[in-house]
Image (cartoon, rainbow, N blue to C red; front, side, top):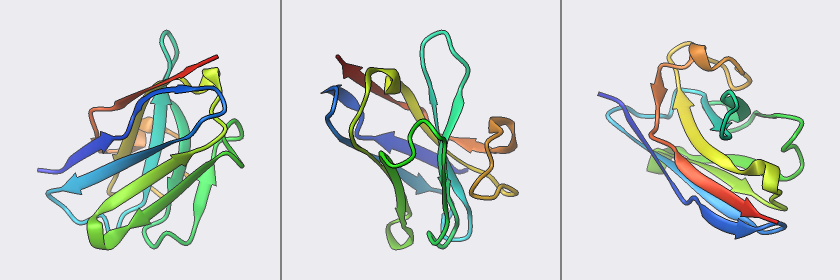
Length: 125
């Protein structure tokens, strides 16, 4: 059974930073691309970014490019989302996801097989 657990969310003022973590158990993440998604109230879940299994390739949504950075530590079976210069529109529940047949830039959430429970990020203005 694959389990993904996000942590690191919270309340931050606009312009601040947060670092989210996604820890996996039940499988090694070493060979799989990972994605980060978010869902704001009343909106559909959207792709934030993704990282290849090696960590050498990353993809980002235009809305977060140059502000967010995804990295991974395969030895710790953990993926990270560093979020800087946060804006109120970044508010939402953030999810990490993995799939057996996804690549790092996969933006369609239905392609992912495994999801964490999400962590809330709230950015105040």
